[in-house]
Image 1 (spheres, rainbow over the protein chains, first blue to last red):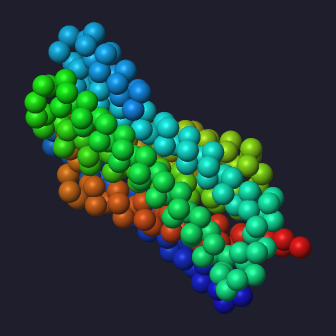
Image 2 (cartoon, rainbow over the protein chains, first blue to last red):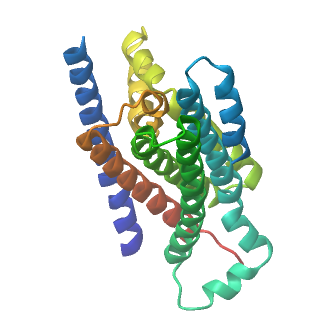
Length: 37
Length: 230
């Protein structure tokens, strides 16, 4: 039960991190294309 | 390797574009063959152990279900790494051969090759996740869909901004962030033009891959540990 809770929290934290990383990558890409334009 | 040899002959037909054709064809072949291996071997990893009943013998030992899945995943990743490195060396040698001497592209393509490998690691984890609860045929189909959607994630983002309904916008935005954004790893065309990703872009893609694979393996372990094999 405790192990399952740990896995679920790892998934939730991981998905939040992935979302944050996606936003960072998108912002960097937009910045790069604005600079090259 | 046959395709890379074919790319040399194809390159001969194009006026002065040999290197570009070789990189384009070689890296695309690497991605496609790697994806096929990741999908079709990945979906059978768990299923075969259950079908042959070898899983019972393995799980009777002091090995957790999570450790079993991790071992299977790392085994396939190692196979894919060897495949990608061998094909990468083939492409580099082909570039040196057509130039009749040293070609800087032979080294410049390696960041793109490693990004292809990272993408294959995500695809393998997706295949393992689906195979932990469904049949191989369905798992292969679902993994293939994720592979396709992952490459067109920019369209999901566009839909999230252009859809009329707020619910649809929320749905597309959620899908965009939750499904793997494989476009982050697709740098074949820039690599063919000798453009390498910046160190920070490469690092961000690497962190993204590790976190995403961690999430998928945690989800696969959660599902697999709740399965009853009696």
